[in-house]
Length: 289
Image (cartoon, rainbow, N blue to C red; front, top):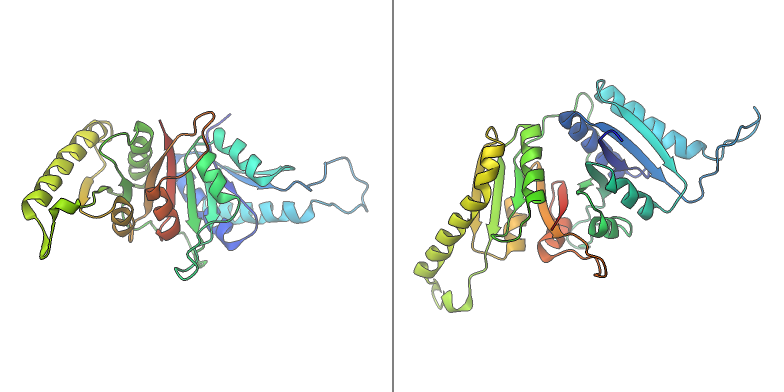
């Protein structure tokens, strides 16, 4: 199958924003965009008599309307529609397995409600075999889509971040021609805290060690993507807090999660949870070994 970016459509403002974001990304990566609408009650498609009502009319209209808009905004992009008569979660997981990435709309609720995703998005993000991007609803603007602002921000541990995470982050920054910012957060230990603040010698040593570790982790990717401008940020705060703060104004925040292993329940770590609940830019969750 030709490489595709798949977006899940359900007619909500969030899913339409996701489709616009996915179209922009597919165009930059020179990939096909697939619009997927899944609903268990979709009727089979037998030959119908002229006066017979099409039970799938509204589902087809949803996909065709989005397809027409995206084709107008991106005339050189190949956009295909797909209607699937099955449970949405299972259909999205299956689609993710043969896509470069899966893009979903996200309910970006305010902090008073502190809830980010629907019943379908969370298990899909936690179980998908490929990267999943969550996009909040944005106001529709007339005219061509604006150029993305800000950098691609990637959250890095000094160990076990995974090649898949860095490859996705660098590839995205290269495709979008924006800088990449690698962020590492490290909480200050109790023994470094004093009544007047923190022990400067300890925090300086922590920062020095983290900078060296980040440089080692990023070096191979500097060489693979020499045109990507790279910077890094060491923040003496919890990793979750450091990442969310660093992603303000970013084009995309990229976080990792451990790939689901057979027999283990799928889950997201604290950094991914914080990014999905509190990040205001699109968030990509990348599974890695």
